[in-house]
Length: 242
Figure 1 (cartoon, rainbow, N blue to C red):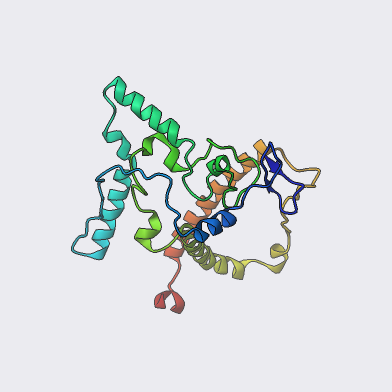
Figure 2 (figure 1 turned 90 degrees about the vertical axis):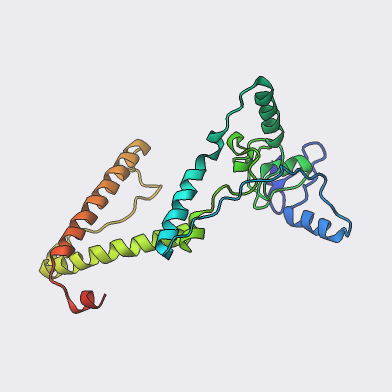
C-alpha cells in the first residue's frame, strides 16, 4: 500500500505496516552477500541475431539497417500456434510472465517486498506495461530491433531539437523579411499569454484538443509557405555560405 504519512512517501506491507525495502537497499543487500545467485535462470536456446546489412556506402548501409529494423517489428506474426496444446502453453507462459519482474521499475517487485526503482503511487503487480509481459514478445530475448539512436547516433530529444532548429531557421529567414516591412505599431498590437489553470474563462478539454489540432495544422501550413518563400528569396551571403 502507498503511504503518504512516511518521512519519504512509499510502499508499506498492508499487514504489518512496515515500509518495504527500497530498490537501492535491496541492491546493497545483494552486493553484501558474496554467494548471491539468481533464484532461477531460463534459457530459450539459440535465437536469431538480426544484423543490419552493410552496403557499398555508409548511407546505403544505414538505409538497409533501418529497413530491417521496421521489417522485424512484427516478428511475432511469422509463427502462429497451430494446435490447442501450443496455444495452452503460450497462455500459461504469458500468465506466468505477467507477475515476473521485468526491470528495476516493474511494479511486480512489490510482490517480493521490494519497492521498484523510481516508484510512485498507483503501482499494481501484474499490470506492468513493459514489453516483456506482452504476449507477442514471448521467447524473444532483449530488444528485437535496435532503437533509432543506434542508427542515427541521436536520441528523441536531439531529433526534436534538430527539427525545431530547422523550422526556426526556415521561419526566421521569412520572418526577417516580414519584420523589415512591418510597422512598429503592428508589432506591438497583440500580447500573448498562456492560459492559467485558475483562469475562469478556460475552455473545456474538448475545445482545447480541437484548438491544438487546428494549431498544428496551421503550423504545418505556415512552415510549408515559409519553405516555399525561402526558395524564392534572393540568396544572401549567409545563405550562400551555408
